[in-house]
Image (cartoon, rainbow, N blue to C red; front, side, top):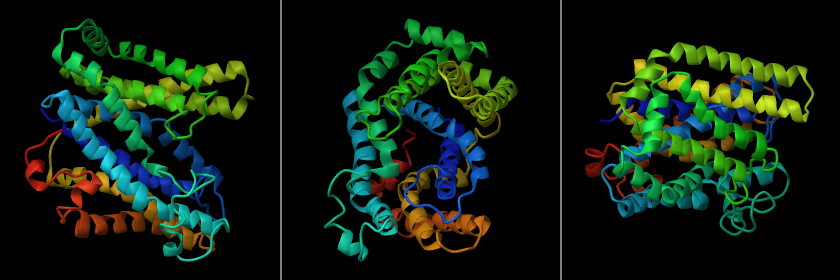
Length: 378
């Protein structure tokens, strides 16, 4: 049975991603282009969202994999993942990402000329950041593709053996609200022992902390959905507890950063606060979504299909708009609103006028054809 709350969460988290990438234009953190004025204050809400937005996406993706694999063989699932993930990634690398690098090169004085002077002649020379070839914000797709293919044997075993000891153990954890936090033990080990040595690159190879961490969360999603209603009942009933724990975890993490200098001890304490915080927010979000969002609607049906093309398109549009706003003295709110509305609006126009309606373009953005869409729930 399809869970509409997962669809809603997926749509909401990807919508937050657009707001987050617009925010990256204004904060002191590294980004492809930057506003002429940096606003320190907005890094706090962005840091809050950043703690759980990617982890919950990988958990949701693991849950979606459970449904997708439930009616396919391993080979059919592998081919479906390649079509839905690799093909849009290839299209994105060839056509969607190059404008982002082009505007960055213009901003840094590393290129002069029109976009068609840059593409394709210069667009694929060398690996970014020294060169121009990159998958930029689409890094999520190769990671998800590799995880999906790598875990097919394990997922098939769990699907065909629902009474295996691992699923029984997770079911026992899921029946007790605080027992679910045993699942943060591996996350804590990765955060405390791997993260310092493998800072995030999103390059897949060599990005070992992100690979191991997100692979674990992806696997957790499959496990949690495998235990059935016991998980959803627990998170819905205890959602307020998880919310309070998330608020406490984030507050402790920020307090530690603000009042204590970095050290080995502080690092291990902060790692604990971080994984407790992100897992509490994930459980709270699942709980509130289960309580209030597990219902279908025409809006959800439309948004659930549109979210993938929006994800592929949005950062290119954001950077293009930002490039022409960056040196204007308009203040934060006018620029922020223009970039948000412009990114959503232009993404919607391209989706509605082109991607959604042209059968041969739909697969290039990860969409099934219309006949399949009426019956597929994966």
